[in-house]
Length: 333
Image (spheres, rainbow, N blue to C red):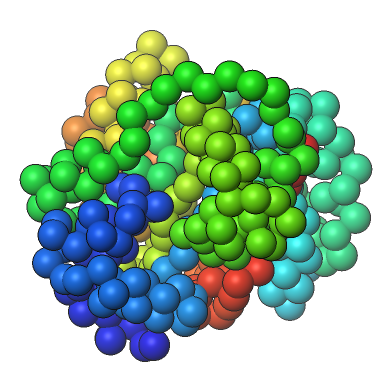
C-alpha cells in the first residue's frame, strides 16, 4: 500500500486508534462515519502493509533511560544501526545527519542495568567509533500523545469517552503471562482475548481479566504509529537544547504545546533538553529553531540533526521506507 493511497478514512482510523488503540469497531463506526466491517478491513490493510501499527509495552519495566549519540567508522552506519536494533534495550534507533551518525533511545530496568548496557554491551557493537550518553532525568513528553489530527476535537473526545472507566482490580499478578500477552499484542495490538488465549493456551476469560488488571494498574500501554512519510509530517529531527536551570521547568511546561513535538527529555550532561520532532518540510528545521529561541526566553539550540532513516521505533523494527516489518524487540523484565 503506497503512502499516496492513504485516504481520509485511513487517517481518521489511525487518529482514532491513537486516542484509544483497542476501541471496538462497532463503537467507532458512528464516530468515523463508516461501518465496522469497513473499518476493520481498512485497518487490517494498513497493518499488513506496515503503514500503521500498535506498539504495546509496560513502562514499569523501564526505570532508567538515556539518549545516546553514536559516531561510526566510515561506511559502518547501517551495520551499526541494524546491530543496535537487535538489542532490546535500544527501543529507538535513528540514522542522522549532522554531528552524530545515530541517535539511539535506550531503556533499562534499573540504573545499574542502564550503566551495564552503556559500559559493557554497547562498546562491543562492531563499527562504533565514539559514544556520548545522556542519562534521562525525566521524560517531559513522549510520542504516545502525538496525533495525526484527522479528527476534530469533538470526534476525538467521543473516542476518548469510549475508554472503560478505570477501576482498581486486585488479585495476584502473573508477570510471565503479562509478558506473553504483551508479546502477542506487539504482533497485533488489537488481538482479541480469544485470539490471545488461543496463542497462549489460556481461556479468553482469563486473558480479559488479566488485560483489565494490567490496564487498571497502568502496566499496559499502547501507542498507535504510522509511517512518517504518510503522516503529513515527513521530516524528523533531533534538537539539543541548553536552558538555564532557573527556566527549565517553565520551558518544559510550554514545549508540549508544539504541534511538531514527538519527544522531549530532560537529560544530565551538556544538553538540558533533547527534543525529537516531526516537521512538514526540511525548511521547518531552522524555522522551528528560530521559533523556540524567540518564544522561549533563555533557550538556545546547541546542535540539531535531521533523521535520514528510522530503523527502530518504540521496539518496532522498520524497513528502509519506515514501515513496520512485524518484528518487535522490547526489553522485558
